[in-house]
Amino acid sequence: MGILSTWRIYIFKVIKMIYRQYAKKVHKIYSQLDRQIESFKRATGLECLDPCGQCCLNPHVEATILEMLPLSLHLLGTGQAEFWLDRIYERESNTKCIFFQNSPDTPHHGQCLFYNKRALICRLFNFSAIKNKKDRWLLVSCKRLKDSSSEKVIKAQEMIDNGLDVPKMNIYAMRIFNINVHLGSKYYPINMAFKIALETVLMRSKFFFRKMAS
Image (cartoon, rainbow, N blue to C red; front, top):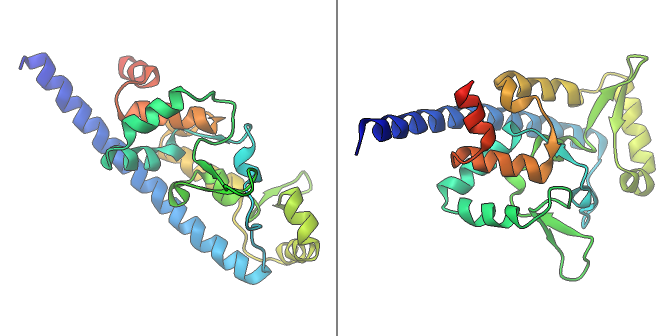
């Protein structure tokens, strides 16, 4: 093996180690968020409808590459990376999330195949708030939840107005961004974000080689 090849392998190992560190930081944020969401759920009684999956069917859901690193590294470590890379190459980026598994009985309902590794927005939606122009924190909830649990949604907003601790979308997005600006700043359709993240951990991505050259 030549010196150049040995050096390249060493660099790849170091970069993968760095990616694992990034993934650990993302996972830590996810764990903190999950605990905060559980507390918010207990206080408000809000829950996503079961079965559902409407969010997963939305092709406009976006994520950053960094959000998809924990899942990509998990697939790499369990020998599933190549399988999912082939699947994502066969799928257009502007379609439903590739990890949404349809219910056999109801096509528009289903579940996430990697729920514990899901992206930030998948965790935040229905259980977080954004600040409007009047500095009021507004609950972000879907139409189905508003229609089915309107009283709970209204009550939850009143509780937020009265100081209930609620996950704040922009704060969590900024925490992800602060881990790594290049990987955590740009938003892509979720399938595209996953594709780039998986290519990156496999060292195939144009994004990766462009960063290496810069």
